[in-house]
Length: 614
Image (cartoon, rainbow, N blue to C red):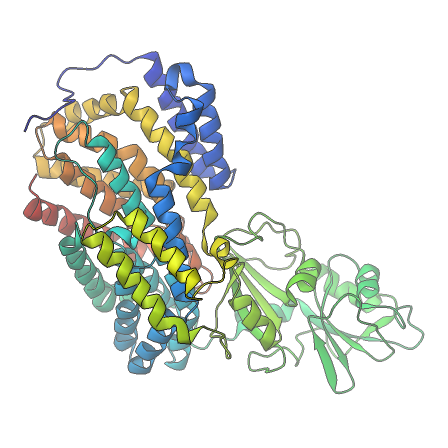
């Protein structure tokens, strides 16, 4: 069949192309610097593309077409279906069964982690899968006297390779399928992906990735968090916590916790009130105070010494950690909370007092972007993956575990799952996959039907539909889709393809294919995986046509590379989820991820050449 849009001759570099390249540059800068949230950046792209319509060719209708795009709606539906399955406790139960098998053997723990994650991630969105399994895997590590650091990066990476098993494994696959279908008007080899279009290659990638993680990768991961780590030591809480008693005649007598906070100053947060033999963990602002009450406070080094001269209170013993702060405490449990993707906390500055009021949990420590924040934590801007050390009653942690703001890095002792609905949820997912795989209806229709079935059968409550959706992903898709259209219709993609062909055309085709994989993987580390496929699939298809190769092979290479981000914590949401609980540094991801990326790049490219030809 003839290959169209071959950039054999140098295309003219037009004003329209330059404008679109400028918009792409703006997008790259904003995604890289994160000066704006990615969903806000996506909306800005729509506005810029439409305002520059004379050059971009994007009118208002095309600008907002991403919201009605088949890929966007399919991803939305699949997120809801994943949320429904997660509320039945199926994923957690699978994790616990694998944990029972693991015992104290690190190798068995790794096998359990990979085996519980990769297959599930082929059918459920891997972001909620990892969010659900972080506390399970942490518990496996602690019970087996293993550092959680050894298991959490493998958890994230196993979910990513598992996402390549089916069309619905990741939102990137669904978006790539939509772009491939749109480009099918120009390239006969391109079409919409079927449900199991690349499963044979996905299985190979999963097996190779699993073998690496189980037998090689863990040697490259340092034990950043010791086995059964003492949270107080890990977060250096002892240097910032003290007990002070309210003395007779103190102006605090008869007042409230809120009054005491105002008196002691903004740098001091009251995390407990001890009275006789009772105590209040994460006390409310309106709690009354009396003579003899002991306040357990968290502050910075400078303010902690100033407590000796604070009005109305006196230190109890030495200014140091309280005996009432213990990881084994059943009344006030010490644990970590990871800021999740959809959290209201993202972008907010930490106010321990307000946090205590809203979440009924006292903040004792903070790890931001993998680094421990010593001393003053008030006012630190929170981001996805930041980890808070808190003390809270068990019932508070149960409530937080069922919400969307944080991931509780411990197993809830009394989970409230809809276990009786698990068979129904699984049956619905099987039905969605079967209808799409048999091509009775497109995945969009079968997924939406599955959403309706989830509600009708009681697996999900109607109000829970909105909570299950990761709205920043939806807005990101809606924003980058018109950018991809602008790249195609202005000829910018063809021009970039010509540059590739003119510089790499002398190389063997399989090497050019491998280079596209590597470039896509590197770009994905800087921006989002969805933005990567939007920018690079049109270029890859045109470049393939220019060298007389199979465009579908190049589309698959870009898709696989964009869905596997192993070089840093930023490239993929699941990497951020394990950042804090694993105590990782940025370089840890590169140390274990770079060899894996090179291995999978070779395996994937050779697999594409074998199954589809180049």
